[in-house]
Length: 528
Image: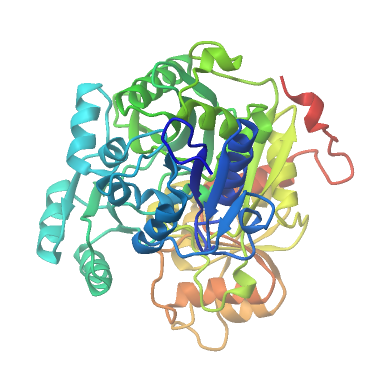
């Protein structure tokens, strides 16, 4: 095997490690596509990964497989043997990219985006300075290490705030704190586990969320598409219904393209970058704010590659090795917007995960995803929700138990189900709100209000086919709202925990689409 640097053709790819929720097959897809692209370019490829159920650990995927943990010591032991010309960390999610700084300190060459650029995206102060320089707005935020600092920061930013560890994957240990008690509870959990990096506290801004995956070669940026989330900010992107292409005003769309291009170039990216934005209206009109940027592959890459026709991992791999986008057959600054719609809908396994609250929030809970493609946005959403297993009942009851902040939107949602002929049930505050809008509704007691006739006994009566529960996320498994959602799972009743998702389901029920008349699409010929 050649060992001098000029003739060395060895490259090591880091996988994503053991699969957990938030660290799934999407990163295995990216790792495998990278290995195949490198082999096509003539390199000898070794992969380090230690999950037996992934394709990347199949015996014939790479030239050599090291079934080792993705820890600094184990990875360095492999590199001592391989002596590669470089290591790829961008396709193994957070597990792999966390090793970039250590490997760089050991003199290991990181292919593509440098360890310093990765740190620039993750370091709060450095990233804020970069956004200020590029005139990119972002929610106000601070970094803290202690409970006292966290309480002071939350008071300065004002509630609600989003709390998360830096270098987070899958929204792990991420919450929306609405008061001091939430902050204290969160910091106790984080400090108990020990933290090396600071906790990030951001102002929680409710608005339309969107994300961009782009490929940068250091000079030009290719944007295969912009995805719009159905659910507003506050729900993890992996748990949101994502529509491609997103629907925005021309001004916002151009701003997304311009800021994404500027940011990818300023970060010094060579390869993939995932950027998440929100559109927020402070009363003066909607504007674009950046949530975060990750200079690595994201879980949307397989979905976007499939529906855009752009081989994103292959292009990113070639860009990491110095090739230019214009030499790969793609135009300068290309932004693709197709004449069809593709919708990604998450799939959950709550019936197999005991005591897990089904309420969706910043921490990812989905275990898979499906795809719906059609000529219209409405049909694509219908096909996606049908494929994800949502039931399309035409009769029955709907139980409403939404939090106080959602009450202004409740009448419009309830009206959709009422017009479709559903019987409306609601807890006291919800029922009063619905009645004020002129709709008949059956009042249902909570358990502590009536032990014998309440929301639980209603679900057990088989009168209800949908539950809409958006009460505050319960971290306490004995909380009544958590028990209600768990009972819905056990009774096989569809439970929706976001107003936006419930509206989309109601729109699907009112649409002319059904499993019998949905169009068939040949994805191989629909792509541009």
